[in-house]
Image (spheres, rainbow, N blue to C red):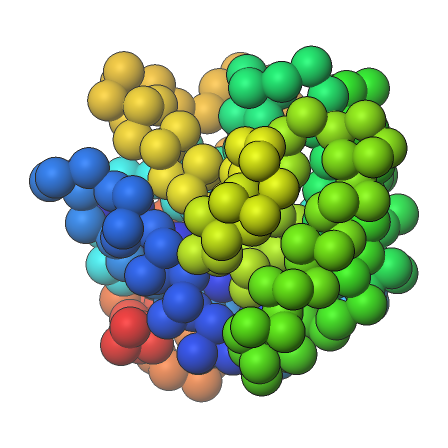
Length: 264
């Protein structure tokens, strides 16, 4: 089984950290492939960058040649998942819903610790759309920017723990780490808090393994039917920059896409 994990920003070091977390929890026989868009923002901290990233991610998927059995989208609360479900013929999971779904199996109420406070409404909207907000006790920002998470790992862990304590006081029995850049920190945070801590990347990988193992995939009967054939000017962008062959469900078999990968 091959699982593609997509970092929605263009920071390669974050892709590497996400890949390490995904590989650590993957079952024997599961191969983790990790990449990022070929263009787009270096980090995502708002709606503008989120929608840019969504377009870049879909462009990357349309030009990705290596075969895979499931996609994990490693952006927390960011758009684009539904587009990928239409585009691909494999299961698509995102870390926001995967983390929340797993947390609800472990406690009555869960909470989320994320990066900047401006990200909180975006995450709440995502949970509301997914029908998962009712059991969310709180979403709190640490005040750390996405790229700051990598600057001083010990300080990052301390701030996450401090913020998570506020979320527990608000009624959360389980904590979700609300950023792909927090991947791999769950054990340290759980040890300090004494409550389960869910890493969204890890949760999504395990859900992906289960879905593929059961022979299931996205329903194409209505909401996520393939895009209707039509001209989309200058898209995919990568096809014009790095011409090569690739395949996705929505395009004819002779479409030309890029095979360039991040090499991670």
